[in-house]
Image (cartoon, rainbow, N blue to C red; front, side, top):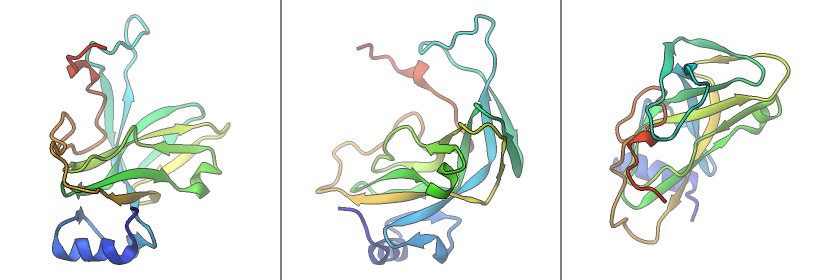
Length: 178
């Protein structure tokens, strides 16, 4: 069940759901606006020109209130907000349609798991032929919350727990091969 604004306000007031910094106008009828933070990371070139899943990927990270995303460029960014989800609530990121109409694709690879704490790393891609100027503090998407039918047996405690800033892939830490 997707949470309503009424329920989101209730959880925030109880402290069950935590969002920092938070402004009341971020809450929409069925979501919470997320704003762009001020850290951006791009994959550094490798000598082979190949990125593998079993080695750490090097990123160049910058802190800036403005970032110009070139055409066909990919960058990791972060939310301005730090989230703490309870063990019975999950969420997913949706980009704003007004930005999608400009050619800016915004997503977060996967679900925001119950029990997650941290800033959310966003994957931004410019499919436009023109560069797009990004500014910290700008609404770039929304977080939609969904109530689970029960508390998770194993709430999130993975490799991105507590992350701050645009956090690169940690796929190299995965030991399970499928």
